[in-house]
Length: 195
Ligand code: HEM
Image (cartoon, rainbow, N blue to C red; front, side, top):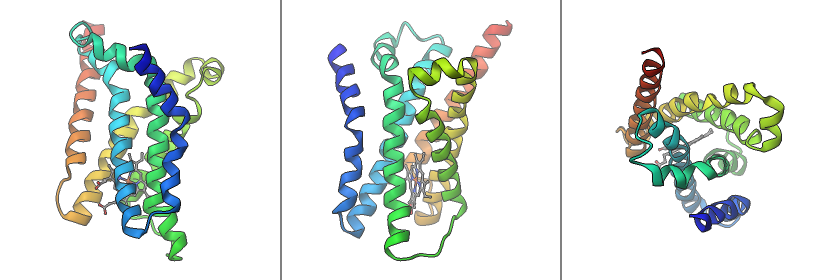
């Protein structure tokens, strides 16, 4: 388990290599790579939600191994998520806009994505011990943005998929189901506290 955690920490330090392909891929390869980075960001985001969700459902014993695997490096998964999402943003929006001198635009599905990215940035820069100490109880409050980010990503992939393929994408279904479970787990935890 420790080796796995070390690998994830090492991957976090080397995550800026994700930007490198952006320099030499052609237009269609860059689009595919950008989509892949978006899906990677979505998966990493879901991973960060899993431990707390399992605990709130009272299933910590059953999924003990999964919790032990994720929890010590949850912060690293969050950092990796932001780097992947930013790579996605560069590939899908920033580089094409600059390369083809496109006029500025922000269709609703991209606005959802952009707000999710900005909120993720707030979590990214506060994902360190110094920020945790400085922000004290505000740190927890700030990191509740995670729930908003989840729904924004859902809106982004749902509307993006409907726009380009006229169908609900697999990514939208996955994040939609995860966010419904997230809400259910929060309700369950609240009911347990009150009852
Ligand atoms: C947390 C931030 C974000 C996440 C997790 C995310 C995730 C995703 C995912 C999973 C897809 C579907 C990929 C596929 O079809 O294979 C996607 C599509 C896309 N995203 Fe994002 N995204 C984010 C932010 C942004 C931002 C800020 C922009 C631009 C302003 C953007 C632009 C796009 C575009 C252009 C597509 C392609 C839509 C299509 O034509 O199907 N994304 N995103």
